Image (cartoon, rainbow, N blue to C red; front, top):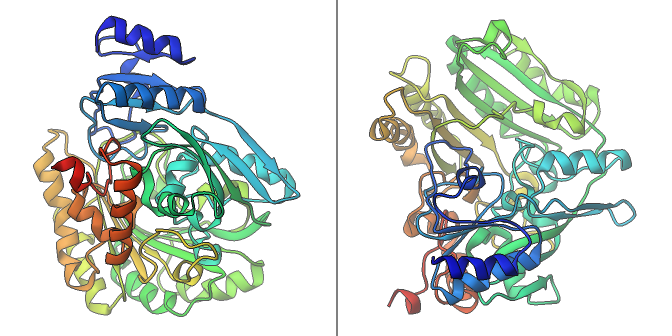
Length: 462
């Protein structure tokens, strides 16, 4: 971009416009996954929808692709030579307690929505990590700690405000451009930049939840017990279990530092007595190192998973199971259990089903509804930063269970699988076909093609 070009863009927007070499550019595109580094042609720090529209219009006139960046959690692959719109300054948030809704702008994190809704006894369908951006999470589907009870986050979106590739700002819902509304909820960032969303809130002030840590040497009995226990649970409870190789970090409780452990996570939307009755079989499955399950306010929802909050380097991959068989669990233990050579740091099985398995009242493009469990693998790189070794470590786990998986993954858990053919596996074939058709309508030049993109329309590729 020439200086006159950038000066013209600066006159159109209220936020900063940065080019390579400008102070502050690296901070504008910093990612949560430290192995991913963006090298944009220009960055626009948007302060509102008008800035986003101006940036997209500028990119269209100058033949630039566009990527969107908020908290950095959704950065799956490097962005090269694009105009990056940073929406982190867009922090508008308004709760309507009478309607049980919240209007959330693109830079807002889930923790802020949780805190704003709590005084009214309400809660959003946030993710397991409250520091994640609310909009990007929701557009990818959104499978959170109470998802079996209420469904995917995308199932409860009232409307979306979006800037499309033509530079137009649109408000879409069931009555206005319903095709685009359908595609955005589950199709993520392929159709424009969502600047705000209006979502449902739910009457949850308290829940019975938390985690139990078991010694790694009991991994087999805990995972096999979990397989038997979880398949018959009511949808009032959402669960997951993870094999964790924990660092010797001071912020961890002393009994967990530097250990290989199994972490059971539960969130029961109901009273303590019923929660304890449901959890009893897992409490007796193996001796616990720490049992942190009890009644808790929804504002403490992040304590269920205790996901990392600081940026870190890692390789990520995912998968889906129609059924979790004993053989599949054993294969997972052989590849990622305490006896495996250099097991990954996180191998999580997240229970699906319940409300997630049902079609929502307003149809959307979210995939994975026919799966029973989701698999997520996180493998941090060694000190030498040998990327090939890290990928091999993570893929070894996915390969071990491949005979039992569907071939796809939840879109937010695709991780390093960013090739269009891999991304296509996130949806049933008919849903993917419809998404491709709508991509050709709303983004015929393939302006939005970064991250987990369905690809460039044939008309643009040709």
